[in-house]
Amino acid sequence: MHNIEHNYYAALGLVEKSFFRKKYFEAEAKKLEKFESILQHADVIAAISPADAKYLAGKYGHPSLQDSSVTNIMAFHPHETTSIKEGKGDFALYHGSLSVGENNQAALYLVNEVFNDLNTKLVIAGNGVSAELKQAVANKKNIEIKENVSIEEIYSLIQNAQINILPTFQSTGIKLKLLSALFIGRHCIVNSPMVTQTGLELLCHLADTPADMKRKVSELMSASFTLEDKRKRVLILEEKFSNEANIRKLEQLVF
Image 1 (spheres, helix red, strand yellow):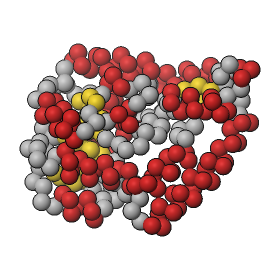
Image 2: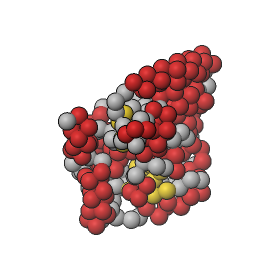
Image 3: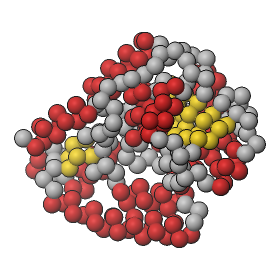
Image 4: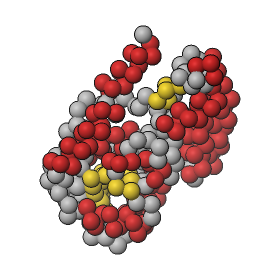
């Protein structure tokens, strides 16, 4: 279970501006919520986050197994090891599929409310850039959009940025882009919905208002990412969020 899918689709509908796309997401959310009941037949359910595991155990856990039928296995991802550059970069990065309403909303938030009066350079990278986002960036000398970028280019941007800044306005599942930012990027600024009950809270700098984000950006742009910073992150990521750790958990369930 890599999301509580009906919650995810309902949240996408809330931020969608197109009437027809909004109705599509609302209809799909209802279908997915109805279909979810098939989980009552599962012997074991692997949830993507502790919060999802709690929800699924409450609805579909087998009391006779004392909820051992529901476990938490984090998302698999492309990074077999951490690859974080020490030192400093000279820009902040937001990345994501910008055709998704949630990501478009987050990018607009950063443009209009966080980097609107900062001198720090912000790069927004992703495909499907909306006309609204292009217009918002048009007169911002410190903000650049990179569109139609390959996955290799995205990873290079994540690695070389001084800050990966990743707000979200829905707290479903775990965002793979956050795992990428932590496995290969330097400082990471997020808001609460991005990390609450994921186990990643200690690895990120938390900021829940535009003013807090501005302060964190100003503070971290001059802070080198040190070897000690890297060691602390590696210790947690490779113990709890590595693909190898996930495989060990799956082996215990299957065999």
